[in-house]
Image 1 (cartoon, rainbow, N blue to C red):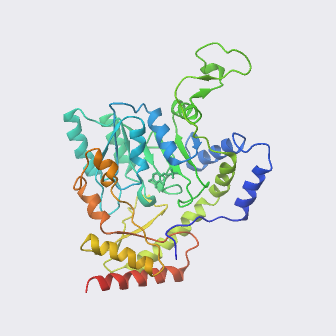
Image 2 (image 1 turned 180 degrees about the vertical axis):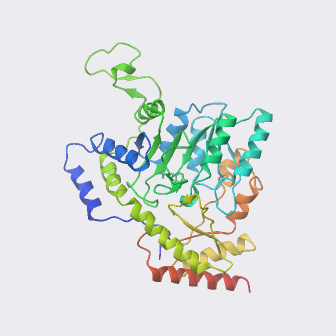
Image 3 (image 1 turned 135 degrees about the horizontal axis):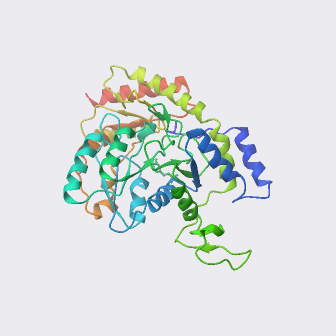
Length: 388
Ligand SMILES: *Cc1c(COP(=O)(O)O)cnc(C)c1O
């Protein structure tokens, strides 16, 4: 079976982890700050806070921006559930902005009209979480302008997108956002096994997130609100969590980060091959706009399907043929948990139309030209069979 995604691990990665195992520190040693420093150098952001997952990063990013009871957070329905769960963890409510069916990203048109409406209802969001679907940045310049106009904060969910850029700037630079979050899960562009990071150019937000990742505790005397009891003293001022990254994970992250440009280049090359093989086939790759370089976490096509049954059959037949095709994503609000909150089918029509046609094909650096040709031939013939 050809998987849809797969990590690339070499001897340098293995050695880096073994070195940590033989060192004095398994966690809270020198590797985490080194990884954070390297993430800053790579992206151009001032600060990086490494944590044990992107989900944790999204949670503490929301908290640092003051998300709480009574607040509203908006995100894209075409994402993993973590993009919206983070708002619910904070006691806020969540709402969804429909997508652009060609890119799979949040539609600026839908966002603009939803904001106009929300302002009239006095229901503006505190935070917007755009998701850089499949590795392509949302239109962050437009989002930033709307954020200024309507006074909301922006967290980029860039779980798919390390190594990509928008308008010539690396995703993660936070040029147009308050905080940007990466995931280092093995299926993503680069990995630390489990892991994530929140990047920002705002030192207060970074300091708050550092505290929140470790119980809300500080040992910096300048942050104490009461006098120290002595050399052993630490103080808890807010309610935090144990979201720390270990040095083992950070060492792997440091090594992987040196290869991220190569991974993204290989992914772009494979995507271009797919694109050219699908030309004039009626199978439509996602549109990548000319202001973006996608990191190509996922290679998604829209197949000419006429019913959810055809969709189901197509994915099933691809898997039978040894190709582990997938679908990204079930609109989040169609999950039973979200329906319980009051959402129902029809809420974001483009996200639903897109969902019923979307097919994620295998994409990872080690995928061969022959495998790509085989996948394209198989998909074309299965689609042809559906329409007879
Ligand atoms: C993978 C993913 C996450 C969660 O990442 P973890 O590191 O597994 O917590 C969040 N958002 C999106 C869009 C993702 O793809």
